[in-house]
Amino acid sequence: MAFGDSDTRPHPYSLRLAVEKLLTTDRAGSVFVPVVAAEASQTAGDVGATLMLNGLYGPAVADTVRRTGDMPFIMGQLMVFRRETLKSLHDLRSVRGELVDDMRIGMDVVAAGLRNVVSQDTLPVVIRGLGLLEFARMFRRWLIFSRSGLPAWSFKLPLWLRGAEFWLGFLMALLALLNRQYLIAIPAAATVVAVSVSMVRLHRALGGAAIGWRHAWVPAAILLLSPLVLASAIVKPEVAWRGRTYQLDASSKLHRREPAHAHRT
Image (cartoon, rainbow, N blue to C red; front, side, top):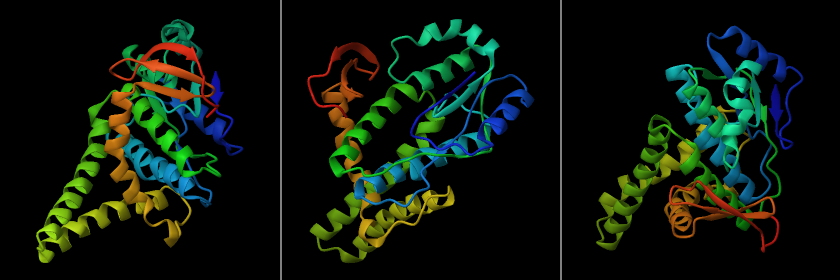
């Protein structure tokens, strides 16, 4: 049984490779195809979303698979299940009401003693025409989803450490400049640049298109905004998504659902 998102562009062989991986891997209950944003970005919002996917989440998935061989959850843009897996999950009734259903399904697969494996293929996803405000909303949703949907600190920790490295460098550089300690500011600022450049290099290594110089500020902006976006998700625990507003609990899990009074996102 396969599920796919409408904003993806599978290769003609994507499903075959996924099924082969599922059927030839011991104790595999599900398989998903990792997404990549391969198109050249047109707007700063496109660049932000692309770097979030290719420069942060995608490399974390690749690293987890390299270390462990499978995943503790599913990123479900294209996922395939054995029918026996769905039966063991009571035909997915256990995820009714979940906001991040694909990640929850993956956690339930692991709880059932099965494995979430990853196809060797990649799945192009369309990110096109995002304005900065649209990206900010998407960024906030992704952070909220990651709080409730990413179960393993082994997956989250490298992302948090990269953010901490960036912010330590930024604060050291700022304090050094304020105190006119320019020689100290230089290596601290170099840390900020290095972390930002690493996002772009990882993006390119996963198959992303080149980022133009006019958008060179976007990687640093993502990392600078992250604490503010996370704080907003904690202070105002709700997310507007696909025409509805979802109320969340303290851990960013679905609390109750209300009709949206705002415009469709």
